[in-house]
Length: 410
Image 1 (tube, rainbow, N blue to C red):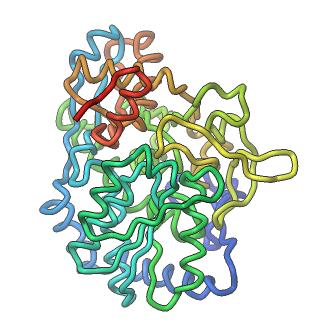
Image 2 (spheres, helix red, strand yellow):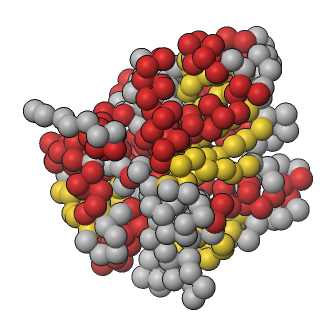
Image 3 (cartoon, rainbow, N blue to C red):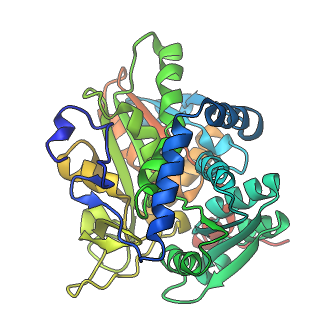
């Protein structure tokens, strides 16, 4: 497939679930029949008008799509360069892009007769979205969440419990997203008969990276017609910018534009305290190398012996030592460029967005916004940047207050 990208970036993965040398299915024999059945069910659902109609109805009436494409006038004037638009997916029901994908997967789970849904979560937004949709359809929900993230994302933990989910704190490793995913996969192996694993990002064994991407591509599809509506027929963004953890919000924005060579694509990883420190960031494309984790081959933070390193980020949703395999492929082929923003830069962008636009962003898209603030001033006024405002910052106010030295009292 390495040569196929010359014709189309939008046709991947290949029949074995690979984007070039990345992706694939690295799972136990116990899980392989379930993975193959999931792929069959997903392929059938993609061609079922009833499935598409149910998705469209729920996206519109339950999630609140389409989300607005917002011209950030004051931020644009402040930076003095390119025109900045924000895709406002933080206005979705549950406050982030995660529910776009969760709806699709849980509709699939119901087609497959599964009654128990498990999920991993870092920032808690995927967990909240999964708990929400499980409540909507009356399904049992178990969410694995690193113990460290349980502490720093307390509002989302309470929301999940209010929605009827069981939240399982994971104490192995550093108690973050990687460890939660490990425990969720162990649960899945043990309970394959009645359990569906709802993965929250474009990672995991095939078909998850492509399936999650497809469900999230509603973001970029909307941007195409919304920008044309605001800027004139046929007008495409000049640059797309999105934050990268596993990378589902980014693939959702990027994928519908991959075959438009005039559109520059930039993913922003979590630089933590700086990529010069091997253990205090989560920029796997900037400081990692290929390996296998959670059922797929991709770029990972690892030591010389191939042991996965514990990443670090102020943002729980970006605190993952790997990246989705399609991002790894886009990186190696050069179709997308991957940079990083540090914790300090993300915090500065967070505050700037609050003051200038009256929007409190999540820490995840604050990384993307940090990069926008770096590049926009040097671009012409007719250059259009679209960044994905993929989550709102309610969940992060305690973390931000702590880092800014502000004491919040009841």
